[in-house]
Length: 166
Image (cartoon, rainbow, N blue to C red; front, side, top):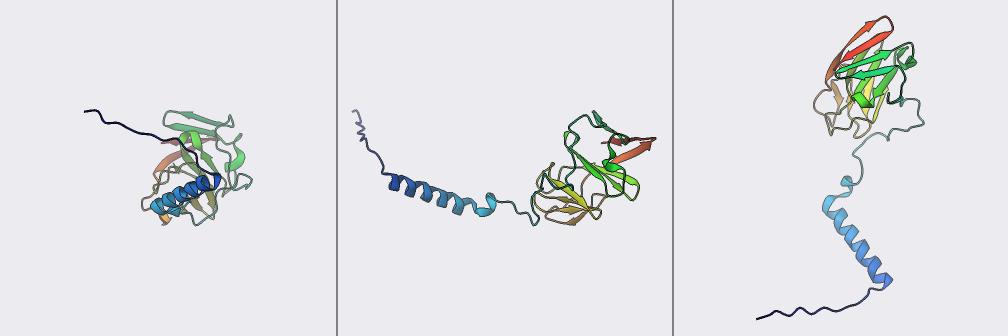
C-alpha cells in the first residue's frame, strides 16, 4: 500500500509575501520580546569618538601580556599618568586605572552577562555599558543589574613599569 503525495506549484504576490514576512517578524517579537533585540542598558553605548573610551591595548603601545602577567611601561603608555586615567586591555580582559596616584586592576568581564569590551571610567566608577552595571575601583557593585563584584588583580609599580598579576 503506497501513499501518494500530491504537490502543487505556485507563487506568492509581492503584497502576500510582505504580509507573511511582517507576520513572522511580529510572531518572533512577541515570542522573545523587544528586550531580546535591544540592550537593557540605562546608559548610552560606548562612543568610539569619546575620549572617555581608551585604546584597547591591542597594539604595541607599552603593554606586554605573558600568561597571567600584564606589564605596562608607563613612560610609553601615558594614559595612566594622571589620576582618572584608565585602560581597557582587551587581550587580557583587564581594566586598569590610576586612582589618586595608586593603580588598580581588575577583570573586565562583567559579572552580569560577561561583556568584556564595553566600559567607561569617570568619577572613580567603572560602568559596563552593555547593561549599565557600575563598580567602584575595588570592583564592588554600586549599581546593578550585576550582583557580584569584579575580580581584583594585584598591581606592583617598579620604576616606570606597572605589573599586574591576574
